[in-house]
Image 1 (cartoon, helix red, strand yellow):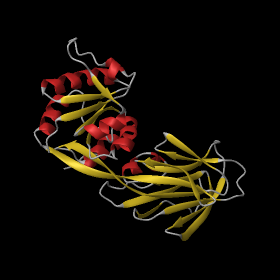
Image 2 (image 1 turned 90 degrees about the vertical axis):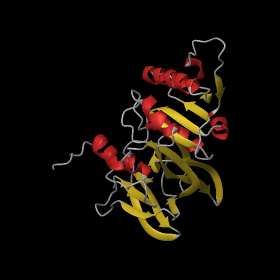
Image 3 (image 1 turned 135 degrees about the horizontal axis):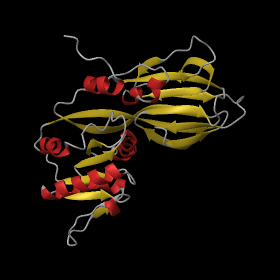
Length: 295
């Protein structure tokens, strides 16, 4: 798969990311690529040549035009870009200028050799699915959005209980009094879900994990369900305050008492590009501090 038109997406206001964006932009021009820079970071690109104009566009228009998108930043930047780029047939690779870097696995110090390999076709491709969420009130869909990591039903106030019922494909599962519920993809199983006591799901699994947040009963435990299921959260009308549904901790949808939240797998896919030597278990060992081989 040839990569000729490249989107360059970044983390504004971060010195390390700015440095990498400029270096990668220069590298791509040297390769003869057409480079389209995300408009919010285009101003920091210094071509050192007044005859070279920086082509810029919105994230959506980048998705429409490019063969490959390079995201410079942390996992948060990748998540924000992925929710848009997944709508288009675009390969995405991440250069890590964040903290954990579960999704951005190219080193900023070695980007040239790793991108060289990718341009030669020496890489791995991985498909990650997203979630779509809709909020219904009296049968009418009022709002919707998408998430790569997780959809979370939660209270606007700290340490505040709510009541809701959970249905899987219209089958009643349980009712609960808790601080909320995390519905996570395999990609998100190492994020907020993990901190809430949820299991790690390998990315190839077609599954979701449901993780109760501080439930009022000790018998409430995380559960893994088929990702083809529709998860419905029916919020009790007895709740006194409005609630929220968050997508990847970035987007908040208002939920009122009596509303229903429906969560299902999105038809969109994120096409991640990894270096040839990428291993998911190497990432887990590195990021989570697991032990190395004994023998």
